Image 1 (cartoon, rainbow, N blue to C red):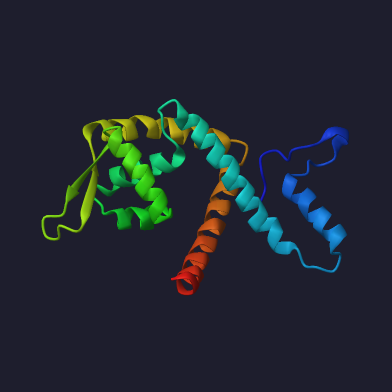
Image 2: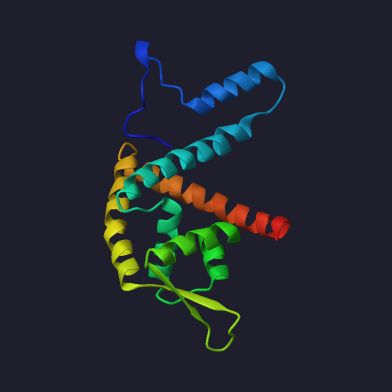
Length: 181
């Protein structure tokens, strides 16, 4: 996979990301250990953490975290009311985390809860007008941020990376659903 420009450190050497340094350190401590998985999983984890920080900073002016925005976005794109369990499955968050975030979004008047007409034990959640407006207002800025973060990678390399990550996601969803479920 090629990028439009390979970062270069002082002295003309290719720049080393933090994971390459971590791998070098582990290799020094355990020279015979195969540390190859760190190259991919370590970078995915580091990228996820940095992307989360960037998204949180972007959404802060709307008074949202990325996790709250994910809930609003899930309700917005679904086009229907959802149960808390459906939100847990759609957002990959724990039930406790979703409950806490929903409580805050309800208190702010962005989400409303209604009892299911067929089963009074089931709550159905939907966006209020204010929640819908906020989701629609925040999405374009969020997409622009994400576009700018990926701007240093050539379009064909982005597509290749997306395909590879899609394959990994399908593999992990299948394996982890069997082992964790």
